[in-house]
Image (cartoon, rainbow, N blue to C red; front, side):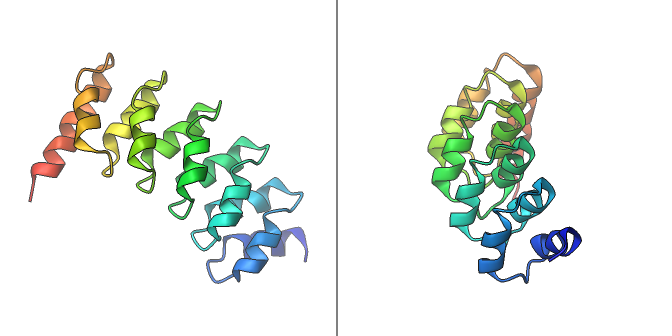
Length: 149
C-alpha cells in the first residue's frame, strides 16, 4: 500500500480490525494518528498506541471512546498536558481516574474533568472550590445540566 492508501484505510471505520492493527505499527506517524482516532480500532491496538512515542498519536488514543480503561489510566499520567485533558474529557474514563485528574496541576485538565458528563458528583463537589474560576464555573454548568430534565 502507498502512504496515501494507508492513511485512507487508517481513518475508514469499515477497515477490518486486523488491518487497523497492522497499520498501528506503521512508520508514518500520520497513519498511526488516524488509526488512534478511528472508533473501529480494536481496544488492544489502542492500548499499544497509548505507548506511542509521538504525543499526537497518544492524544488521539486519549479521546477515543474505545480506548480500554487501563490505557486511559496510564495516559492520565502522561507528561503531555493535552493527553491528560483529553483523558479527562473522555466519557469512557473510569471514575477513579477522573478523581485523580481532578487534582491535576493543569487547570485545563481539571476543567475537562468538570465538563465530563461521566464525572461523579462527589468529584464535582471537590472542583467547586478549585483555585481557578473557570473550573468552578464549569462545575456550575455541569451541575445545572444534570438538574435539567
